[in-house]
Length: 108
Image 1 (cartoon, rainbow, N blue to C red):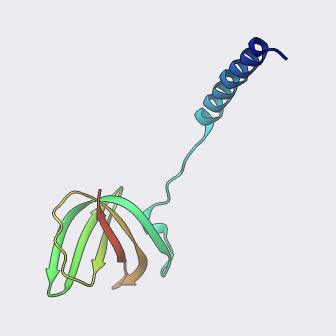
Image 2: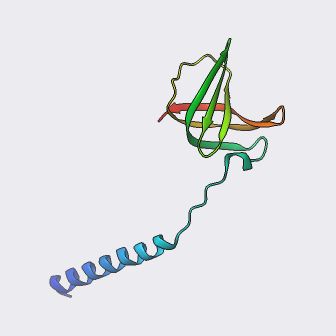
Image 3: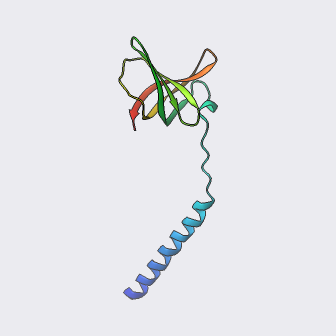
């Protein structure tokens, strides 16, 4: 096979591949699980915005919203201001409400 033929075949297959990916990605639906749908003791990680911060000694509680507001508990005194954050932790039930015991919180 000469180089021109090989070049044409590779360009045509690349263009067809991109078109096929575009068609399939248009039909793809990504569903996001609501924060309150997670089971107790289940791991969770999400991005959200800090709405409110409460500190009591070495306990810090953030109200974080994505589509709904969820309390995130950190058992240390940390300094964050309101804004976007990434939260990773475990879902717990406290006084009939779901909250996240944070393992990691990072500003976005």
